[in-house]
Length: 189
Image (cartoon, rainbow, N blue to C red):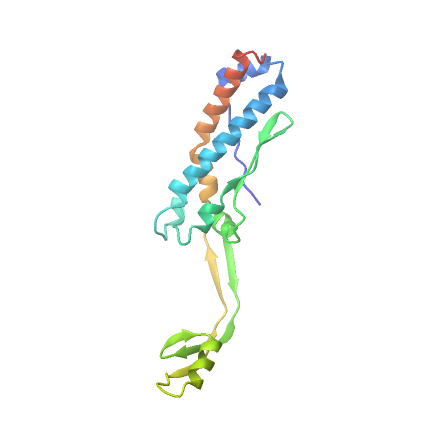
């Protein structure tokens, strides 16, 4: 489940590429440029698409920061030569990244449980046992049962990663074009 973005190399570079004899060398040079552009794009995504205090409207394609975990997890795969092209990905391995990127439904099950309170504050079972054994200044200890109903959240597609890459598509194209021109003019005929 992913979206694909293709970058077009400027016409001045494509004319030179058509005459290039060292295709393997050129593709390796373009691969390095793609890796560099991916790192710049991750910085852009973190700075523009995953910043601030949300919630933001889905149309802004932006997420607010709560813990910073998603921002820190955005990574690029190493670019690889595939046939006559270069392929790489930018994504995250954080569990909730997909629902923000692609949208969908989150089904929450109903649940029941028990909460311990000591003087109105949440407490562990060990703290409750310790409080019960006190001889003086006994605190108020309560065990409260709770229940929560099942519910569904419809999460809209925000796609901050996709739109962060799309924001920089022109810069990818320009950098790949410059690399091709410099490679060919530099002796990689």
